Image (tube, rainbow, N blue to C red; front, top):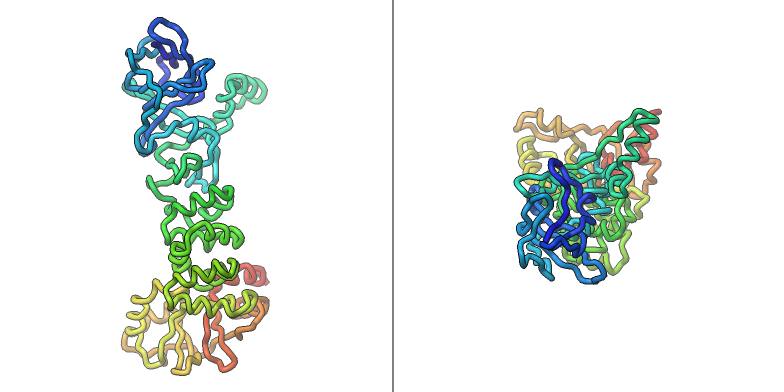
Length: 419
């Protein structure tokens, strides 16, 4: 039995050139054509494992192990090599079904791309998948117009259309064969910047977004949510169970967590809050009590405050111990027992101070505050006028209730900074 293959001495072979090749038995009789090839996608450069043969006039397919194929003028199959079931191993998928016309994520460009073709390398009678073709040339090759396109571009414009390949070592399936991702490591998207990952997720459809989001670890999922459009935030968090959603939201800044929970249906938000650690849940509930468009809704309560008698050395020890639980660490706020703000000092001033120095002697008592019900435009004016990285929020009794970091008002502040 013979599979008519790409003739030597071709070193590289494309999937589009393999598909449709006729298959013959030992007497030269055609029994079908190659409909697909399988490979173990967990391998660094997967080798072809099984051929799917479409039989003319038949609904069912036959399968041939690539190991049963010996290369001659064509490819000679040993007797009894045809099977009615593929018998695929773990992580082994048929490549046409899994890859062609499917979307991938390019970690270099942080863009969603479409697979137009696959490139294999011939090596020791094996075919190894080495590149994903995401370019227009790959699409033209599949429809049989590559040579015509080259002739036209060369003769009219003296131009040769380049290949656009992505190495397979950067490609991995995500939870289903219908969605692929590129990753510097073999099993995570966490190497991408959260802002880039958020852009990628926003480019996918709702089902693909859920697949990518659910594949992320808790910390990466939280960072990505903070960079994602609020409407998409809601749709993503609704795809996971309340216990996992609570773990993710606990990793977000308190202000971002409150904004997200405030946009969720009431029963969903309450279910997540019930799963969260009590202390964090209470802080979030406090923020939820304030309208989003006022200072109380923009602030975070996860800031560092110390009494005036604390020393610089003691504050650094506290900061070292609690930094991971704080949303904002650029300033240290000095408060009296009644939680009234006495002064503040920057992290730079703290690091430069002698360990035994008291913060009461180091703090700056010239500070600006805003009230809980302050409007965004008024808050933005304070940022722009005083050039601070955060603004404390106080109540009517001048008790400090939270801090608005610069980032929370970046879109409002940026136009004013140019004045």
